[in-house]
Image (cartoon, rainbow, N blue to C red):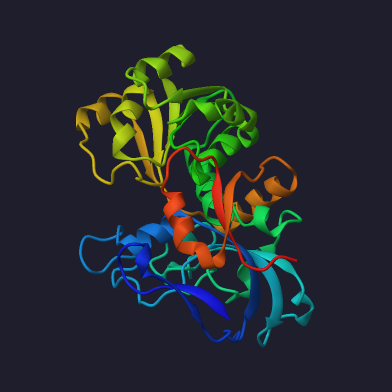
Length: 347
């Protein structure tokens, strides 16, 4: 099969198009013919070594074992099953829950043995992948590319919203609103939880599209008075912040939060370290949440919301598998809206 593997930490030159044997499903596993694979910050930061501070970087302390096939937002079709799996599942169109874990229901995402596809396992930058049958779910939409944008970004956004326990009528500030997680945060917060959304972006040319997705207000982080802009459109402080940017907007987020407000972060594309004045934290009675991925129950609820039309895929551009390096480079450019997707096998 054709695959793109990462040979070590570094730039896109570490991505190599190779031929590999088609994997064989073991007991309890299925072989999935990959049709599409969305691109996430996760596999880029994995390649760049951004999850560590030395020569070992990854979801696990021991770092990534190279070569590794990245890719975690996977849609495809089951074409073979291992022992113990119902043969009738052959031909089923599926999306993959993106990690394994021995954690009990509701805690699987925080289990010490949580292992991520595309990091601890070979992922979806390949024509075929094996995965536990129990972690393969019915595809929510009748389209592989559209279904491939939700698994990681959607689950991350859904879990962020559930952690904040957003209530109808509350106001939430969404940073990085043009990206994969951010654009889904806009939809989930407004369409599912009934919150009023203030979206923060760089380029105001996408204002109307973000309003269509559910944002009531859109502001630009390039404004010289961003804090004042946010407080003005909301007529005061916000109830919560859904952040994927990190340092670049951290101070602003804390200033615009009301007393007793909640801050949830699941990304740091704008800086991985920051300065925190603890007085701001305790004098305003703020609650902080660190968040990544989510639970199987949340994944199921998210898929139901997609199938019911409450959430829609937002796709900026697609690339063929062979152009994975170009796709990852494009991913890091500004001014986009939504996901970048690799297309492997079109029907």
